[in-house]
Length: 328
Image (cartoon, rainbow, N blue to C red; front, side, top):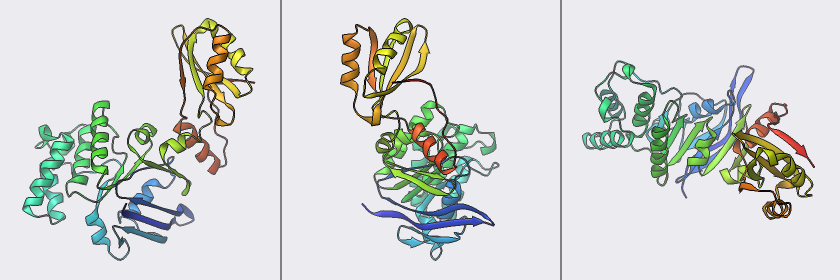
């Protein structure tokens, strides 16, 4: 694969505050990278440096082989950028905005028509093309922001919260579009929505207090969750205490966690000691003790847990525990 974004030892200081602290990573063509972190972690600052809106204090950024400090114009030609909040000219219509963007980018008449037609069809904004942007809903504004980011068919797409404000159907459409485009581009998605990472991303980076704390594919990150290989059981509320006692006695189970209840049906999780595979032992124990359950499933692990553990650790805090756990 071709490396389209290469960040080395990137640091950004604002007076005494270090917003980005010696961050290094690269993104290849065909990758969709989820860029995660709590508020104030340095995500947006990093994206603004990559796109040329801010200058780095230290380190280098190359986009498609061009150094951002020396070849800023070439870098900006290669990037499609959707900033946080999708700031747009409110008095323009989506059509006039897209034409304006194409003129600024010095696109030919043919490329302009092709790019605008493509963006309109993919983002489904044809029914609001001639309304002032300021009159559009938040979801439509977000889609118009995405349209201007892809209209010139860039090699690198940098999207800050791309599905913010979209309804579930619109989110699905945007995610499918990102998957479609990913094969020939490098896509970086800065987001707080962890389900977005699972749905779209081939890789995820977690940043906290300006430092890079994880860089793995989503499944590998999920495997770092304390709930990796946990076995979930759904059963009648009347059987929960007995089932919890039986499972807590298994050496391979570190604890049993009650996670939810809908009506008379309760869901519990048998947490695997050391993340080992415990499905067979749990199933046998339930069967041998004659406990009637409606469903048994295996947890892959939860990105939310991993995110919380890693970011709290950097901030010197202990991640809050969730759920009730009966320990063996």
